[in-house]
Length: 280
Image (cartoon, rainbow, N blue to C red):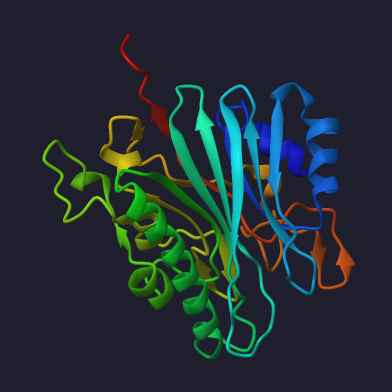
């Protein structure tokens, strides 16, 4: 089922980079790409997480477009000592020899209530921001892509204040787009969230828990260009619940303990970037 959705993305070509959450182990990802997506030439970057449930983050990438340099991991230390998912970082080299860093996230859930659990996501945001700042210290023009399930919306404290991922709208992208510093982060999902879009529905509320956040360079640098308004919550008909109480929401694999044979309880999100070719 997941392979079918992946094939539909990127105009039927499959995404060039795909962050994944709640993975049992690398063997599951290997099985999926080798059995169901062999023609897309995917490779995997992966690390086991300390999470007690054994759900990890990983990255799938097209091997003809990217070369794996290394992986890094930052541990999120929660006040109650409970182990959670790593902030998983992957360093890749593009076919144009440009270095990019992708952080795949799955922050602590809202279990116990959004406000009560908020300090845990603030801790995750601080861990990620520290990792980003280490990269900026070495290279203020670094190409950083941050993806995942943050279990918070773009306006929550963890995203807006701790991670400092600023809203960006395409009407503010123009030739003299001003920034205070190259070391900034911009949230591509903010505008859609503002319109009431979401990737996950809880009761009657849509939340944009799944987001794409980037550094300045992929937006106005000379190596990448963000394609304006290309951020999208991806929801082809086959992954949408068609009827009943949950009509219009993601069609999940399970409903409680009942197997439904669906896809996920979240919709995936995507954004498009152009790689600027070097002039020879």
